[in-house]
Length: 110
Image (cartoon, rainbow, N blue to C red; front, side, top):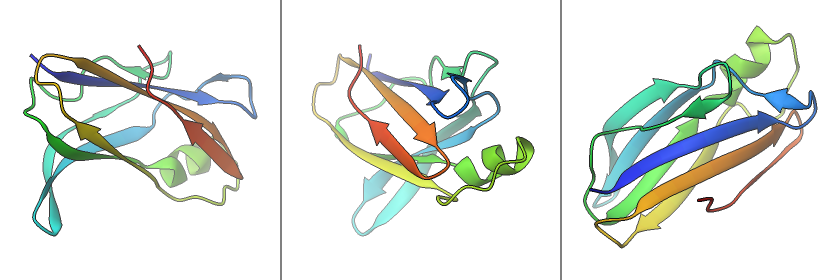
């Protein structure tokens, strides 16, 4: 069963980003359809955004604006969208986000 997880690290504060809402959507033609959502825990993690997914193109939308507002930080990016291509129906996809108020980076983790 294919699963998607994430981990958000606030690189400006040097700690996990707790309380970041994340939505998972699947592309359907020209639109994206909701497939799951969760909020990062105290360690900045979401172990599973949904129970099993099929191959396709997915978008993880990180609501960084609400996180920055909750921490009293003025950020430049109200959302960070990461679009991934899920090809293997039996793989686990881990998508970390390294976040600061004026930049971000992501990669495929393990």
